[in-house]
Amino acid sequence: MNERNFESYQLSEEIRKALAVLKYNTPTKVQSEVIPRVLENQDLIVKSQTGSGKTAAFAIPICQQIDWEENNPQALVLTPTRELATQVREDITNIGRFKRVKALAVYGKEPFAIQKDELRQKTHVVVGTPGRVMDHIEKETLELEEIKYLVIDEADEMLKMGFLDVVVAIIKKVPANRVTMLYSATLPKEIEKLCHQYMQSPITIKITTEVTTSSIDHSLIEVEKEQKVSLLKNVTVVENPDSCIIFCNTQDKVNEVWSMLAHANYSCEQIHGGLEQDKRFAVMKGFKLGEFRYLVATDVAARGIDVDNVSLVINFDVPIDRESYVHRTGRTGRAGNKGKAITFVAAYENKNLQSIERYIGFELRKREIPSKEEVKKAKEAFDQKMTERRIVKNNKTARINQDIMKLHFNGGKKKKIRAVDLVGTISNIPNVTADDIGIISIKDNWSYVDILNGKGSLVLEAMEHTKVKGKKLKVRS
Image (cartoon, rainbow, N blue to C red; front, side, top):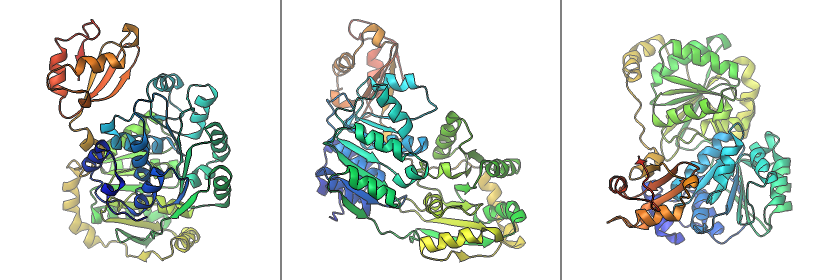
């Protein structure tokens, strides 16, 4: 199974169009192995590293197989973190955009009632953390009867975070005649046991891509613990990256490093598990949009960051566990771009470093601390870049949405407005068809409609003089 062209999968025109806009030109190794097998409804165990394109590997065939007319969820994706749930939902929405696939992310620390209201509406795919998904199942707000695909993403992280019992409880609730896929960077015995207990003759796919791909330059700098802060400043000046993630092992260290960089007028932000969820999402969105260049983070951010042009990853602290090194450094060198990963190593961290090197199969190249002359020579270019906004070269969501306008109507359930009413009204506008209408969400007092194919302005203007179900609704973009 090694078709190297999306055309060979006989995907629908809507999916092919989305892949073209997203610049998914050639399947990655994991995609070429997974997509045809999911289309054949085979259970899969997939061992694949971060950055391999595994989300699209399951999202493409799931979006292809979705029955748009069915109102209840047909696929359930479990992820270990809220950030990853949000990222996976976004990827599925992008791939299914022109088929109008509705994906919803559910996770803790967000009002249950809002998610409950969303789940009452047509929803094709639910992505969520195990705890919140189980809450919805127990309160009967998540309908499982039509679930045909169950995806367990980053299973090794689920195990590490203590979610495996909840995952098993969810597996027991979903229909038995489903397709089950499990994705993991590693396959501990507990994960393998789970697979063989709850999957039907699963096929195991192991993508043997070395961590040291040609796209990432791995190196280390030996340094005294007290000198790490000054080293960070010097390295960032000399490297002068377009964008950079600096990983620390603790929230306190993130705060310390971020405060130091902010005081030195770096274009930077911080993210860790101690921040409020809204703040974490705002920081992630800002980084993707290029609002700042430097992100200081704990490992919570290593899962769910999908920014194609992160040019440098710095491990301010050597990761405590070896898998974290893979996930951290996997934030750079993505989507065919080159990347660098530099690790600062103090003497007390050598034991962790040796464990990482055994795991990845090679020694990190040692490099020297930048000299004063190097720093002085690079300072002017660094200062200049710090005054400029970062240019985001490959924002997939922005590309897929560029011809889409979301319209807000001031009428919803309380005015007895239904999706069919909006579709009927809008598709009667000259030069507009049902194919130009995307995802529709109806709330109590508002309705939201995505207008595709650059027809938004046309619909917006026409609706100023058009009634919906005999009612005049205010509409804005």
